[in-house]
Amino acid sequence: MAALLSCKKPYNPPNLTGPTGYLVVEGILNGGGDSAVIKLSRTVSINKKTTIAPELNAIVSVQSDQGASYPFTATGNGNYAFVGFNPDVNQKYRISIKTVKNEQILSDYTVVMNSPPLDSLYYDRKGSVFGPGININVNTHDPTGKARYFRWDYQETWEIHSYYYSRYKSNGDTVLTRDTINDNIFRCWKGDTSSSIVLGTSALLSQPVISNATIISVDSHDEKLGVEYSILVKQYALTADAYKFYENLKANTQDLGSLFAPEPTQITGNIHSLTNPAEPVVGYFCVGSASSRRIFIRKGELPMSWVSYLYYHDCMFFVDSKNNTPRCCYYSYYLGGNDFINQVNEFINYNKPNYDPYAGTLDLLPVDTIRSNPQSTIILGYTAAVHECVDCTLRGSNKMPDFWK
Image (cartoon, rainbow, N blue to C red; front, side):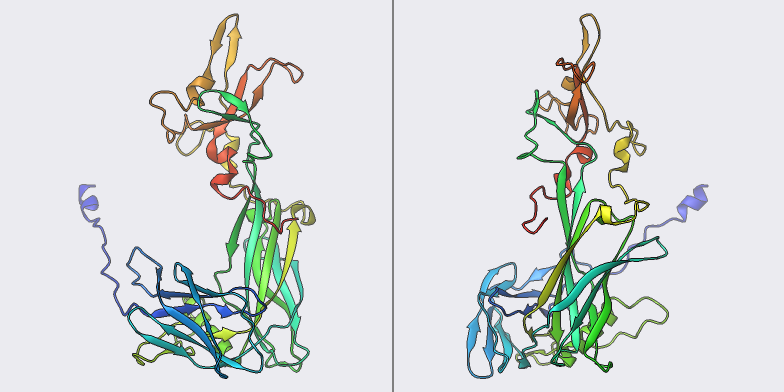
């Protein structure tokens, strides 16, 4: 046994080093009067603790081929914005960047590609190795025939509920009635943005029409479908060169790792360093307005047999199976006569000396009252549970999104 244990040695991988510090330019210059935002950052080594290195204090502007210039303003964290940008479809545009190190970055001039409207955004049921679920699909077409290449991104929002509905709160040593309207901790919303590159083209089709293009799939057990789910899909029209750039980027970042995956290729965009032409600049400068649609999917619209995975699955148990600590439900109660056991003071008294909010058995929120019968006005005590079973704001926001139905 000792000999076997002595063979185990910690593995410390060698430092992963390589060229870093390349400028990354992100953002499509949208028209339509909204704020146009460009994000600048630098590539970092894979073994660095920091994954994002924003490029600060740069001088950023967009220039037209007819001499107009639009200076962008730094808004923090490597973001640069211009309010009210309305590109002219009869002009071409390029981006100019001057860094604090006096590096001069310039893109090629590019035409304006405005996206046609999204004809429809809908969902249909799917089957998968993980069980049934839904596909979010789009239909689109350009009657002018100009837009043949597309990219989509999306923003997801879904409603979550705590396992317990808390009608009470503690001010430190006393249980009080909770204002469930202004102090709601039962109903919250979470969100996510697309992290994959979704592309589509009608270039090889006889008609400039894209049908049933799947943007994202959601499995039936996903918590997103547990109450109500919404997705906002944005569509961008691309030039053939921009589409090729994103296609190569997708192949290098998403499609690697399988036996039949494509070989990594050099990703060349339309942004260049004039100061050091041999140094790559990561990104592709595009100009044009996007189109968008939003849909909502309620739990009641889906098959009753679809049961979402419960994040709070341990909350139904009195004792946590992982560490054998109680999760619910403490209360104060009478044994009879004058014998009274104040478990509230023991477990919901935050002002108690030596109170440890991370001790598990003490970190409890009151949930509801205990009475001898529902009509009784005498409160015997309170049920309570650990925070993650009661307070949804630990995982989301209790501020309802403006667009929520």
